Image 1 (cartoon, rainbow, N blue to C red):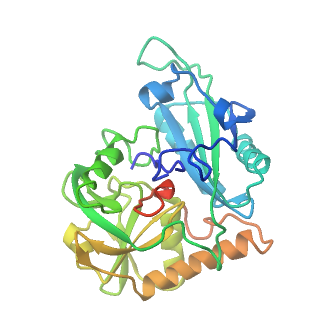
Image 2 (cartoon, rainbow, N blue to C red; image 1 turned 45 degrees about the vertical axis):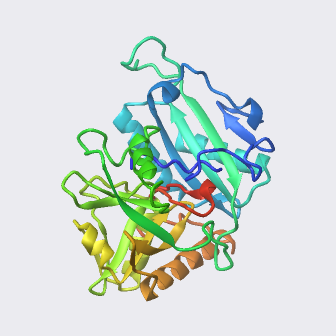
Length: 342
């Protein structure tokens, strides 16, 4: 999707700290650390008024952001689509994220970094001069790695929805913006069945992605996922998983797939930044269950996090595998129903 609403309390849409208020946290707003209750932006901010803003949902393990370089590149790409020259370096943005984690004494956390065009009153057309609004939100998550506790409490149920993915010619899928209405409409359809995540199709009826996740399934001894040639968010977690599969010699097929391809698959799982890899139990009421490929890739993902974030080794967790994150889902703890995208 164009965005990933995984704000805690990211599928959730609140910014709470366990009591759903967030009052105990300090957030980073335009260069200053302020109490959550004082963390405000102007009602005339274009991010609020028009969704004229870019964002990334990040996950910190052991005090460091997972695959920061990949997230920074995607944020740069979104800003390029928006022609939003905010004038800030990736290092400056990274510093603000680290400062927010440190100020809240958080080593393992959800992080949302937003950059809006700022206040430009009076007209829809944006001015080339930008005084950006930059906000960093955080919330605690369980540690990752081999001893990790998932933010979900069971496999997901997935439901195909009528809402279609916005064509790339309307809103480019690789732009992760504050405009998330497409995903919201998809999620609203789930109220009837109570499913955790939506299976969203493109305008031609092929599988695109989840409302806030990338979709994978196993068929004919290959790992399959919709191609980025279609309207699919290039998820950071998605790219890491594809890389891990190829390193293990698992055939990877990226292409166009129908809902029946997913329903009839041997295994199905979805990915995003906070969920990591979440197995899918049913698709449209049809059992699919987990399996050896899902189990193997989940273990390899945990081992990478363990190695790079809890054992003193450095490196970009996505660099070796190819990089990019999808978004979220969630009937369990709704706070972590996000993309990750990401």
